[in-house]
Length: 509
Image (cartoon, rainbow, N blue to C red; front, side, top):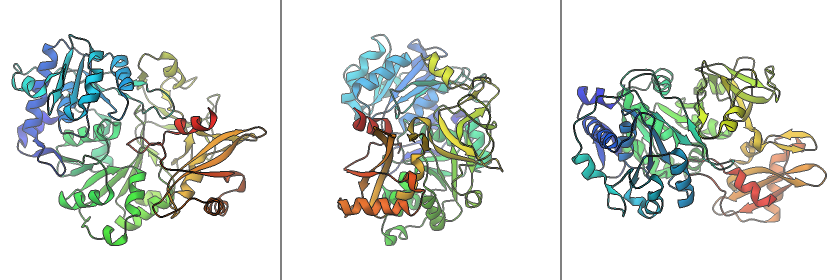
């Protein structure tokens, strides 16, 4: 379903609200505005399969643009608003966008990249004027008659660039109308997480990212309400949950860590009893962090593992996780396979590349057939991977070990940084941590921990040795870092992903 269905049945219900502001949209407004924008884009010459680029911070208009594209048979490409002008321009150009819609709050950035869509393409700004852009509000107000809904559009997002320059991830356009069922994430939200029209969903992550955009849209398809936070702050998030009577939400593990490190008096100050589903994904969650969240909030913590490529998804609830600690769950759409470098299927417990099986090729990398081919299994093209490593247990539960590109090979032995990062994550002196391999003349690589200290902690050789001893007590000695470096800030994307490629480059360039 889509907002038009709910605009007819519950027109005055709030579809999305920006927390701590007066900005919200009812289902009638979301439907009317997205339909008007669809007409504007059509009149600008966009047709099925064309691309609309969106550059915004967390604003309710993001969902108007999303649904305008989906109901027009277009691709929507939301662009990371924290990128440089050159990086944004690359994505807009590479995607072939024929329209660019921007928030006036990003006016300087938008002005620098506006020309990348061409003089005759649609360029619209909302919330204020930007040179070279037409008024979004005026375009909506002056739009012609509604269009009949075209076949559904789709989302084409760009990878976060954690291991290189971003690539567009292009799914095939669905062979259905936008108001017909069939979107897999909607079904997962409904049947695996029990989300429906009575839910209030909290979304504090940047809207350009795959999970906030897709999940917000899934909530709209099901008729719920999205509470969009402008950014994540741990105490503010607790206040929002109480204020809006949030029943469901999604966060990343770094957000969990920041909430857990709040003073206990602050954590107990807010009524969180409305929460029945708290989802996490996007990055590995250290087991001690997950267990602490379950101890705090009860068995309301759910996890899924997927990717921007959306080639597969696993699911696990709190009880299953306590029985299989560290797992990200079982595959819920197509079977998962663990394969070696030659493509042979491995036995339970053996670490290899994670492939998800489908009945079609679920995505291609835009303008990069070679990268698309490397994501496919050598004998089964509809088995695809994003390069993550892991293993299955005897019950079919999946465990992640790391990305293949992050594996440290020291003296011919594979070491998976995530295991060591999990150990250090809740050390009281550690606010954030990354474990990487650095060049070594004899061993090839050696293990290094790079640590961002908690407030009040002071770097010293003694603290470095304490951290190494802490790890040594908990993992095999060959995995223990040989050194610890302290930094002011680790490079993470706003969605919580560690940009390890950038960090490693600092030690190898």
